[in-house]
Length: 299
Image 1: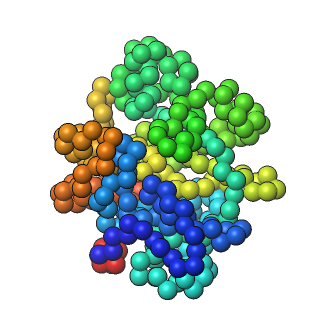
Image 2 (image 1 turned 60 degrees about the vertical axis):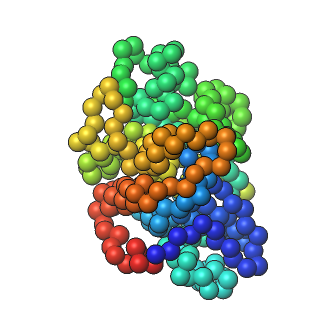
């Protein structure tokens, strides 16, 4: 079983994000989803087997399902050049050739339920990112309608929630209006699909880019457990936080270790790795209706 922590490709410089490695080919990029996992703004020393392949496959499913302008060009390693094709055993299923776009410096967050930082703000002020909500809502309550709550993209640390007006000041009102509408539309369609699979899409975030001619593209990962909060519908009820299809097992375990979150984190025990990998796999299989099969695990 391949566990990819780093995707070093000879002859190309690499920019490493928390969980993805990006290679610049000039007017195109190669994005490789590794099996790294992050929590509390730290990359952990233990990888989750096949996480990168699972999230890549799920992003590809959503791009096909949504049929919106996006940056994907190919997943064929031969299109990326010999250096990538020669590493097919490691990179197959986790590498995407994409158009290079100027990243809009805003996380486009859509929330349909009251959870996470939104729930914390609502308890104090009755608002989420400055948007007033009805009184008396409980944790995980479904909102009267989905809301758009942008955030800044920070190089380190947490992204910062901002108002729509602040977003407009940063990138221009016309673009802000367009991204809000596009993000809400995608959330609505994805939420309906998730519901048909027995899942609730509580919230998600999108990233957008612009080509030199002004065309707006959906970029980065889309509607994965790393960028979205999925809940099993049969375990949902208001007033509590339902289990989610993401790295919650990792966060919960780290909270029990005494780790101070200011120094390198401890390695994950095998049972936490296995349960987390199973959750990623289950999310893919439920959303796509397809089995990853034993062939993926054997790579």
